[in-house]
Amino acid sequence: MNLERLYGATVGALVGVVVVSTPVVAHVDYVTEGGGSGPGVVDFLVTVLSDPLNLALLAAGGTGVTVATLGWLRYGDHLADVTVTRRTLRSYQPYLGWLLRLATGLPLMGAGFGGYFFSPVVSVEARLVQITLAFLLLFGLATRLAALAGLLTYAVGLATHFPTLLLSSEYVAGFLGILVVGPGQPSADLLFRRLVLTDGTIMSRFRGMTTVSDLLSGLGIEKSVAPLLIRVFLGLNFAYLGVTEKWLDPGRALQVVEKYDLTAVAPVAPEMWVFGAGLGELAVGLLILTGLFTRSAAGAGFLILTTTLFGLPDDPVLAHVTLFGLTSALLITGSGPLALDRTVVPALRARIGRTPTDADAERATTAD
Image 1 (tube, helix red, strand yellow):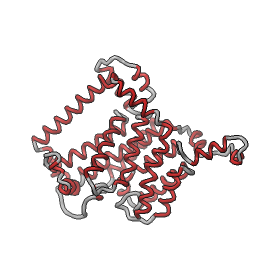
Image 2: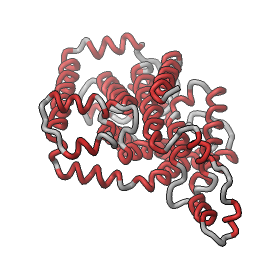
Image 3: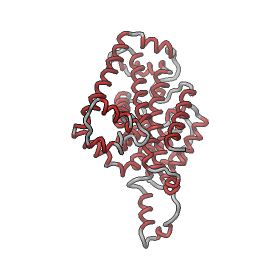
Image 4: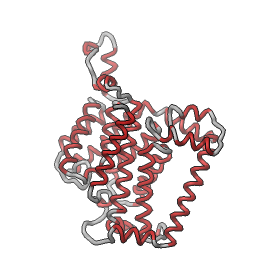
């Protein structure tokens, strides 16, 4: 099976899981109390979409995004700041493995000491397992094996806590990214690797042993596929959160609006607050999933998380560290393979008549 078919099958299966899942809450559940009643999904959507002011706001927002997108396609590459920013972000590639390890290991360590299983709403005692895996990831020791063990641990938990743990699916993106990218630098694995490759060391006796990296290479899985794996699970996570937490369970989301008096921040109806939040997360998720304006979408996702961090003071920040790290990783890598950035974006630039630049040729291999 080639990469295109594998990508299509994976996305199709994951979307199917999302569709058949019952509405659940996690991040909203972190800051609201259980119980209470709220409008049904249909009533909620009718309330939002039957209000002329809400429709005008949505139309204005859509127009603004369209104008900004066209401006970016036409003029973005002519800004030296943009070129330098992209080049600098790509220069961080050697530290990508370290970033993924920190982003996955730190919240996993917090989950172990906090007494919950990946998500703060799943109270399962797995302290020793999670702390051990977190230590190995943070130290960069047996990194790929630890990531594989983390994937299996998550899969076992998902089988018994479905669909709740789907809302922590960003761990899957983190584990897969680490498995493909490897430990990076600095790491204990890199130290041992250099000892093995240096003549005259005791560790050099183990030279020639098959490693996980060798097995992955034998299967044709290279580091370049990491952005694709991160995009699939991170994009679906954002989209899933936006739909299930906001649109399919508006009652709990409306509690958040009331608790933090968000209508004082933006004077719109509470229902519009919830709908807009869900729409934003869904849009960011779909852009990341399809690899369309990937870096911009990752930056928007990072901004959403930052706003949540400062806007909801009792939200457990540690539970969102993985999302922060994964969006940062996509800012570094760009879209990777099988992305609309490689097909649709160049076609749009040609359609609006922009003169190609050297940046276009560069982006043909490092799409963003």
